[in-house]
Image 1 (tube, helix red, strand yellow):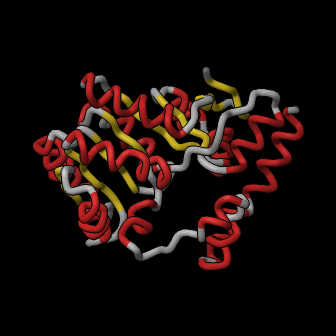
Image 2: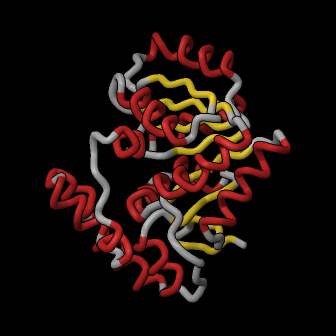
Amino acid sequence: MRVDILGIGVDALSMAECAARIAGAVEAHSRLRVVTANPEMICAAGKDPDLRRVINSAGLVTADGVGVVWAAARLGTPVPERVTGIDLLEALFPLASRRHWRIFLLGARPGVAAEAARRVGESCSGIVWEASHGYFEPAEETDVIKRIGDFKPDLLLAGLGAPRQEFWLAEHEGLATVSIGVGGSFDTLAGTVGRAPAWLREMRLEWLYRLLKEPWRWRRQAVLPRFVFKVWRER
């Protein structure tokens, strides 16, 4: 079941259910595009019909962040839990290792995606990896697409930043069995950006930790009050 949050349909699924749906798609060789929708993306979609169409046409849209979980509950259509991009990947990697999935990482600065694959591969040795940075020029895009196509990934992870990754994956939906926009997850997996301690995540304060670590994010965090206001008004 999908719940409507300011015009965006979010699947009311737990982390385990999302991982199971993705795994089922990979095993059945059934195309699936996944969007991890956070408050910033939902607000942006309210002003951009093309972005709203791209999100709502995805086969799976997860509740990325406590703000989305709160909004769903406030609007009377609760979702089980937040399903962020990085947490979803960490749930998928052990399964991918056991089933020997082919995973392509596209995004981040040069060397970051490759380092992320190397680190994850230390504990998930059954995965077949390929990686490419996301700073390619338009003239280089054809080569990037060919490289992905030749690799034939079960899972294509795009860390190109929102909404670029959402538009890019929708445009190239046939490149992989399952494609997921994962934002800045590669930096976290590569160890270049640290995650909040588990106790802060459990208190739903990961956003505050990231803001303190990266003060420049205040412009992005400023969307949260607007998101809250829109949900209150919708209610």
